[in-house]
Image (cartoon, rainbow, N blue to C red):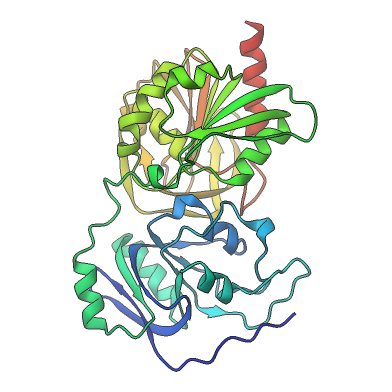
Length: 374
């Protein structure tokens, strides 16, 4: 299957807040978007990355040099649409070769209003971000001159302090059914949930999963009579989310087993009295090593987050540190000592990424079973 790209002679620009400018070729939607410029080290899974709500307000750079080879398909979408504000690649494949492909990546971005830039040195950009840190940026591929892009970027405040989870959460509850008769009922607080999290929750129970808005109160969650509660992944700064979610979480702890993923771990940490901080350039990719400190087993995990929980801010009498990121030693998981609750700072559903950590869903249902017996 071959899709031909439209010929272009105009230029595209990616400009960072420190003035570093990259000039390349336009692709995707023609327009201008601001966002936080980050990089992802996954070798595959670009469509899952594009549609991951955790990337809201971000311009994503792929470190793999060749993107678009296998096209796009609705089967790989993790939400209803892409959430990135821009997509940066070294080279876009002009040939789509996959029996599952329903279209090409260029047309997909065009249809969803996502501007792209290709033909830049993504290795140099990634090294710059690793040194200087993730920063505000602007992508323009519609002919807007660099001087005007710099002016627009100067007026952009960045994502710190924004409740991005509130923007991507569902508007109303909905159910995800298991393939067979459900043994459990799980309520998932949606801070930006990925479809495969809900699918795996449903299939590995098996369970009926009710996804509810992240602003849902503890009373309303408990009124649904769940066997367990999932705190989902989500984008951006966890502190604005904790302004409403922390009270809900405190109202659930001890009454129902709780599992948190990424944003879910961060807001759980804040609800327990901990603090969070912004990482220099974040963890984004499907090759992040994490050690389970209890078994000393190392798992290769998929991650996507720019904030982390400060392990020293959590009370050791209330929380056991269970996992550490081996790249930088940051907290990657903890478990509550007095109530059935645990959380991890990575994506066990692996979309995209390795499947090493999918057993955590089984651990969650084991916790639920033990809670039922008591």
